Amino acid sequence: MPKMKTHKGAKRRFKITAGGKVLQQKGVRGNKINRPSRSQRKWGKDQPSSPANREHLRVALPYGLK
Image (cartoon, rainbow, N blue to C red; front, side, top):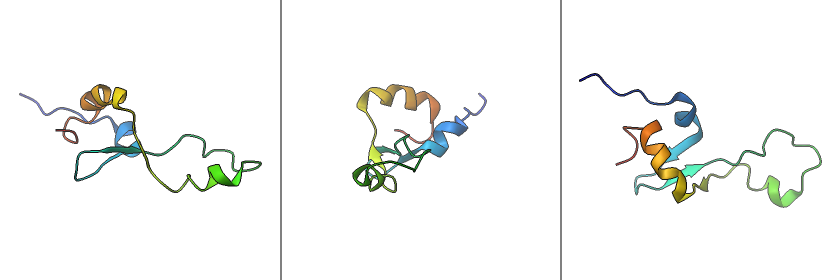
């Protein structure tokens, strides 16, 4: 049986911790002008992903989620 392919966009956007949590970066990073400081503080940090995305990520990252 052939190897399954990893979705390259998902590989760049999501990170899987050793404990199995899925982290993602928020998508508001494009325009840094006129953004409140409280939202700028979150730009460097990964946020936990929604549990609803877990089934989609299982297909996109076959070797990342167990």
